[in-house]
Length: 379
Ligand SMILES: [Zn+2]
Ligand SMILES: [Zn+2]
Image 1 (cartoon, rainbow, N blue to C red):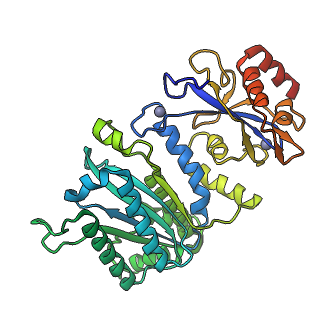
Image 2 (cartoon, rainbow, N blue to C red):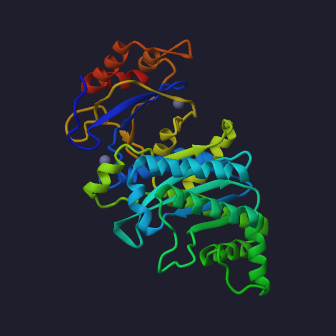
Image 3 (cartoon, protein in one colour):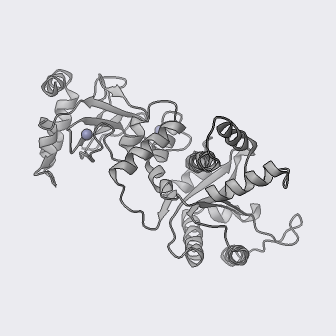
């Protein structure tokens, strides 16, 4: 039954809003970081999916990057070893942050340095209210060093790094910290800031000039920094395919979410959407759909099983639809009594598990004329 994909985005899946009945199609991508077809769309979907998590980091967040020394990198070409290290760090962080909530994602290359040289580093964004205790940070680095040496059977110290230092980057951001830093710069107590870039300082000054309070101006920049960090960690870094590395990492689940994140209330969803809009100049509705929400009524989207041809090249389910960005399309506007909705949902909660309904859905979506009739029904 399963048809093999000839090109990325050849197939799409259908979903329907449980509330308003709007029907969506999402192109199915290969998700490979070096794929020119889906890379950017996947990046924006990832951002859309993870933004509600960083939204919860409203008091402040810590940002870590754990880099692996060059001579140990071959060992971390194994997926299992990458996972092991990630699990180890989660356990250690849990000792510091008792209710650990974090997003962790690997970058496989340093895109600013060399697109060919394997350079795995783990980025972690942690929900935190204050700067890490220096003793905790020191111990974390020691633990990390010990882990690397024990696992690989190699010493960290080399000719170029005789003291055997591990590369752990850490930074903390909160509105309060931004405000304090800004005040130090304003009063001349500090000439330069390591963590608050010039562009943010300029923005704060601009906001103050047009009458904003310092708190509001700093909060605005905090939100920006938070979104930028998420954008940074969700971006692809494996940009040029290398068979040896690609084969090894095949199927590796790169992104982890640790801890419990409360369900979002309606007003929070709306706030999240407006924050995302500030970060993305284009259409953000696709991003909203990618986290399972209807951008029109904020109902939950139920995705149907199976897949159909997307029809971007020939005929298929996306054709004639409206592009919402991120490879997501509206293919039929909703009404509460849409036949598609009825097919997928019975009694509001129960979902039809019968495969026949799903294939019927795809069949009708595939057939242009019938599908158009359906659109007419929705009015
Ligand atoms: Zn809806
Ligand atoms: Zn692709």
